[in-house]
Each structure stands twice: as structure tokens, then as C-alpha cells.
Amino acid sequence: MRSIPAARFKARCLKIMDEVKSRRETVLITKKGKPVARLVPAEGPVRGVLGCLAGELEIRGDVMAPVVAASAWESSR
Image 1 (cartoon, rainbow, N blue to C red):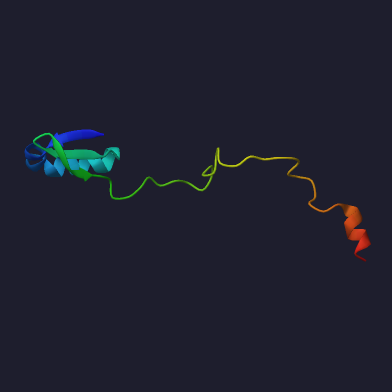
Image 2 (image 1 turned 30 degrees about the vertical axis):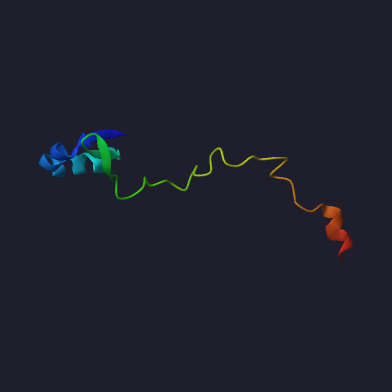
């Protein structure tokens, strides 16, 4: 995260806002070296549907096998 003094932010506000939007990078605004505000992108990054659960799930067993054995279908008749 980049930090910038309030006076410099005031002088270059519009340019810094454009950079935050395009780079999706947060800027910390300071006064006398102490943080007073944080400028963050308005929207979070857009995540696609494909691969959104990558690394979150673990496949166990045969995913193509039937859930219920064929013999169970025969006994229900």
C-alpha cells in the first residue's frame, strides 16, 4: 500500500484517484506522518464463475460413479 502526505494528495487528487481506479491499489493519506484516511477502489475485482472455487474444494472418490447402486433401484420395485 502506497502512502502520501495530505498536502500532496490535495494537489494531485484527481490523478491519484485515476491511478487507484486503474491499478486497483489502495493509497494511505497521512498528516504529519500519521494515517488519517485510506483511498480504496470503489468496486472489488470481478471474479469469473469458472475457477472461482479453485483450491477450495477437494474431490474424493469417483465423481462419475452413480450415487446409489443399481441393486437399490431393483429393490424399490
